[in-house]
Figure 1: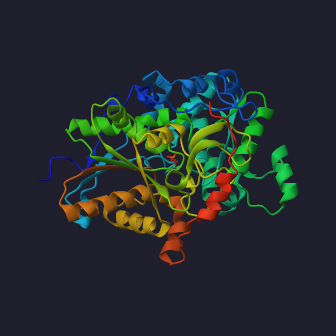
Figure 2 (figure 1 turned 30 degrees about the vertical axis):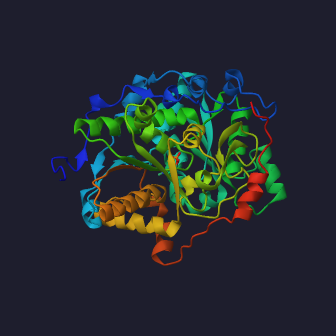
Figure 3 (figure 1 turned 135 degrees about the horizontal axis):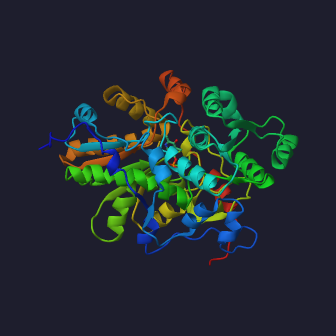
Length: 459
Ligand SMILES: *Cc1c(COP(=O)(O)O)cnc(C)c1O
């Protein structure tokens, strides 16, 4: 019997907004492997990391033990402008699927940047400001992270320099203008403002850029100017920590109605939204208090979990960033042009990688056209136009709910709806015009980039 007393949207009050982030690493027996200095092969010290990242964020990055890290009042006040985010019972989708499953989604697209990335952007900008820095640099591919960071920097009065992959800079003029509206300086990458950019331009004058190159430029730009640090929107432990606010709210809302999810689903690019959504649930699982099935969904065109290897690798194609132990396809892997820009990363969060390796997490790869089919089905009954990234989680949630129709199981499914797709309408157009394809890398292609992984001695 369905419990019809549960409202369409479960809102928490402002007062119920979490007061501390939850650090999932504190409950992991097998901790994620440390970041290594690519020059020496040794774990990076706090001092080395502080040359690139803000001090307080370095502490969070290296802290595997503190369970609860208080959210500073200033960040909590900013969160109050768009949080707590709604937890929605997908009654209309359930009806359309004729499933006995109960489906809930946590919607993170309710802010102008349109995604969950703002949760970490404001935290990273805040610590930079508190350290007395002048500004931050970053890269952006599809543009969600750059947008979120621009908003956070505008709020705090911090300079924001964004290196935007040239092809996106040209093809996504609206994203670019949102960033400039919030005061960010947006440079198409590769550019002639950095050494690495000039070198790449000299060699490949017609290149449309890549995320790896934009990262290299952003890191160089931060190092070149006093008072600047580099910030990153996913993958890192600190980003998962900030994103735990998603899971803490979702759990508090479900607990109010005595609902326990059986299955939790999230899309996985660098792993930050999934890591945040599952944090408190995974904590219970690791402590042996509850059991949940947890499912990461990735694009078949960039299948880090399902076809990658668990090894030390560079986080960027320029090979200047630290080495992280993670599921990876190799930093030289270039995914085919798929339309979920936020999921086109060759690696995966070290925290989620360790959990997957230890069997606490499942993963599934889905193909692009089936993802857009799920996105449209969802939009037509639930009303929200989902980001293509988010639609990977929708695909899996729908498939699981349809399986329940066959078995009659009344499973409770929770998934993360990470953002909206208003800036992805070219992709929707391709899908609607029947011009979208599914590109899946061959075993040979993957073997080539995996073969090129850096050789790191076991530590
Ligand atoms: C960036 C992004 C993602 C993927 O990033 P994660 O770090 O894996 O969460 C997913 N959805 C949206 C809307 C994004 O902008």
